[in-house]
Image 1 (cartoon, rainbow over the protein chains, first blue to last red):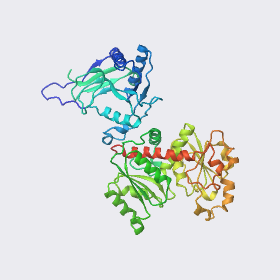
Image 2 (cartoon, helix red, strand yellow):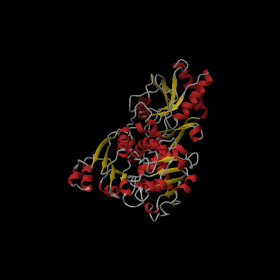
Image 3 (cartoon, rainbow over the protein chains, first blue to last red):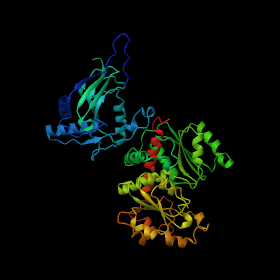
Image 4 (cartoon, each protein chain N blue to C red):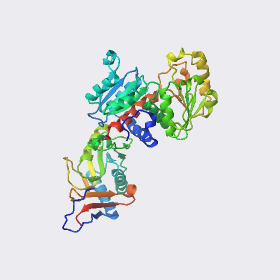
Length: 193
Length: 308
């Protein structure tokens, strides 16, 4: 993470960390997205939630769990690994490939909702759409994200957004979840305090 | 990440395990409608084969194509090699054509090592003389792991012409890295005199197949190459088959869970009987299918990122 260089005249600035969503906020936001999915999909019929690793996967599981508490429907959950579809593979050392795990009934003809933690450039979602078309042919594809931080580089938008966070490009949004990091929190690093 | 795959000894336990894990993900592609991944789009893989091979060349070709790489097949027959071009000049030609990876099979041990110094791309050893064949060892390890669930602590018998076998050499190195114990079995004339304990800890030698069989999890039969049959390494083919061939009665001495492997091509009736080769314990066909997945994993890990 690169911070803007401090001017010589001003005192050295501490990189700031701001908590945007605390644990209780995260669970309220997940609840709201679950309700919105139920509303927009007429009770989540023929719907499949596919989490994009790493943190999209626990989010997809939580959404499915909340949906089944609210309406008593079971929404199949899967994992869609996008590593081999990334457009920046050659710019980094070889990335480890993770598992892709589709629900047993597949995704053909279903409404697939991709789930991820942060929507930023849109490149991850672009890769996910490519990966999706290689594993099946869904009837439609929607996108649910916990945080939309703007700065899109591709014509992609989310259907369900937990929280819009206006950010500067130099800032960094960090999502932690109990399943992967021990606690639920959304923080903004590097912004002006 | 490693740049070339020349020897089973190039891989430490972590890298080898990463290749096997990646291969498991690659294997799921074979069951999909679209059997293709875009990871190596725009990369060129040259198959440089100075020796006849069916399954290895086809396996590498299928692996590269499933990853969307462009494949150029080069076999020594009908090329400038027949006109006397040296390996180095051929290598420089490939270099000029922009090969990102060269998969090489050569009758001379060490040829891939030489090649690795001449080209900028990655070199994958697909069998060099009597030296090594590391992707075969990886696919064997993958097959053992998927059938038996683990590699650590497995006892593997490698039976036959160990002296001339590149498959055996790579397997000994890789399996000992991954924690398996290897016993080499064969007539004394076909077992190397000295097996370095530093390179392959825990590897031992036996000249009696029947005493080894009840204690192993895997028995890997090696092909007896026809040219060796008249080289007086053993008195006769029949005697070899009697003492070291795997037949039905011998197979029944194996523990219940043990599997039978063969790198192919088989001499049915020589080192393995049809009853054994076609039994449910035999993984011979599985090994071929796993070969594609493992080679996809190797090509992806060598070429997938910016490893230069």
